[in-house]
Amino acid sequence: MDPVLKVTNLTKVFNGLRAVDGISFEVARGEIVGVLGPNGAGKTTTIAMILGLLTPTAGTIQVLGMSMPQERQRILARVNFSSPYVAMPYNLTVLENLLVFAHLYGVQAPGKKIRELLEIFGLSTHSHQLTGRLSSGEATRLGLVKALLNDPEILFLDEPTASLDPDAAEHVRQTLLRIQQERGMTLVYTSHNMQEVERLSHRIIFLHRGRIIAEGSPAEVLRRFQQESLEQLFLEVARKQ
Image (cartoon, rainbow, N blue to C red):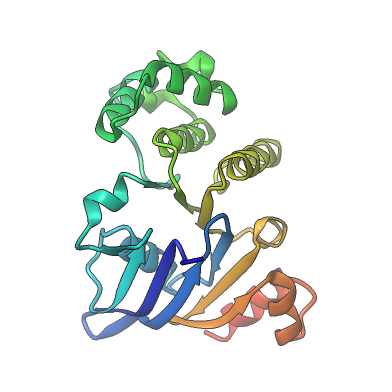
């Protein structure tokens, strides 16, 4: 089966600095892949190029069999992205924001879809609240609702539980897992929560200074580096920068 995401020799140079340095990897349909690495490793830059937000210096990107950025509009209709660091307009209500995005995504019966997702993520009572008055955790969950409006085949997540307390984070993890399994959705996400990564990921891609230094299941990567946990491995890599 062809991969839903294929990155080949991807490179991004900023003012002479190779933020991403010739990386190649593939992601299969229905996989959950964690992209790890210290700050500055190239994680966010890589995802930004996959989504067409940045133009690669070199290399190719294939998403769902289509070339990015050449077929960006067709690709974006079938994928989505969420990050707690990307805010929606504060002066619109939760419902108004979601209706705008539903219109942009061409969602059929948007009211029904929005109500279902708000219920799933515990935001039903906030639909008429100004988005700017949400707590950071509520705003994070709203971002996930937005990202699921178009039933994406691939969902890209940047630190999806970073602003959540442990109970809310566990609820979000279980909700995402259930939706992923029901829909056969592919998840590609970044996280600094190594325990979360070990629990959720089928496979991890570990970046360091723009290059892939390890790839495989969490257990395979730990055996290769002779570490007992991803947290220990992460600390060892980060301290050698």
